[in-house]
Image (cartoon, rainbow, N blue to C red):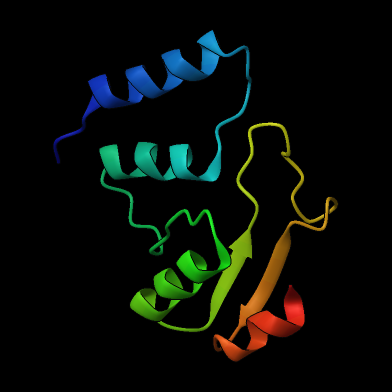
Length: 94
C-alpha cells in the first residue's frame, strides 16, 4: 500500500505553523486518505443550503459538526447534531 507521506507532512506543518496541537476533522480525513484508511464521506458546508446539498449527495442519516480549530470539544460546545435523517429535520435544528 502506497502512503502519501509528503501530503501528511504538509498538513502537519501547516497545523504547527498555526500554533495548533490538534487537527480539524477535515485535516484528519486528509491524513487518513493519505494512508489509505477508510472513513465515512464528509464535506464542509458554509451555509445551511450547502449542508443540505451535501447530505442529499451523501445520503442520510448524517451527523453535523462544527468545524473550527478553536473548538476541539464539539459536543460540549453544542456543535454536534446526530442522526439527521432528512432535510426536514434541519428546520427544527436551526
